[in-house]
Image 1 (spheres, helix red, strand yellow):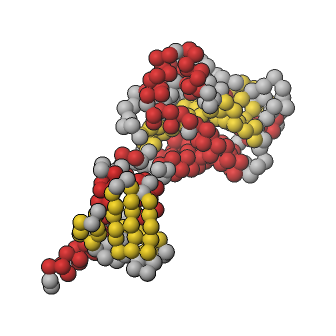
Image 2 (image 1 turned 180 degrees about the vertical axis):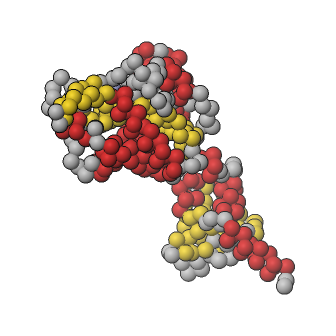
Image 3 (image 1 turned 45 degrees about the horizontal axis):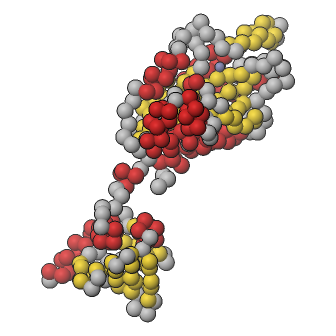
Length: 333
Ligand SMILES: [Zn+2]
């Protein structure tokens, strides 16, 4: 085999090992101007005074007239693609800098924290119902814990590579500060973060109040901080990923809400998304939300909240909502 054929073979093998990048991705990233000559199957990319010319299926290019060897651009299913190696070569020449590495730019959720509200001496909401002639006590702290434990099991099965943590896993009192401290005990890289879901159950003086709802941080969260503490604001604004994660509370909430509808087959009242700067939520640099599973003080909801099948479905909804969020968040550019 001649040297050229060996080189081509090696380039071909290499092209099989690395995922192809579309020409469009490169154009979007570099804002290069592209022109195409269909007769010669040749293209050119221009940015400022730099120009790259290439011929489709040919393993050489012209960088401002100077020949360069590399792996060919090819057309697959109507799209022009190039191997990672060629993408790196083109990007460096056009931008005079290294391309953004996939690892660096990749957002990752590495920790999921479930936070069952109340516990121990703190019962949370409370209601008494007569069922079959017997008095039944419904305590919020027990329902929150039950659903959180079920969801933690499901999440551990689904995400063996992520850390799944509970702020409490039995019936004991945990202060808000302790819950926040658990969340703040992690050190993350700039694009890494966590999901934090608080689980609560509602009560109302109005027995007709019913359904589930989800709370997340208000859109003007940063502005609220500004009024209270200038330094804290700067800390938040200086760390871009924190902002990114905080704003994602909205999406996280919507995913869980949608899955609650799916799991209850639309038969339980959906009270929608709500915004508030809860003490719990505002101390987290992460995508967070707080779910209210239903009303202990409403007959319909109370029947569901006593039913282990329903509690399992609520846990499933939280798990699926978090999964949907992770899929969306980790695959964004
Ligand atoms: Zn509560």
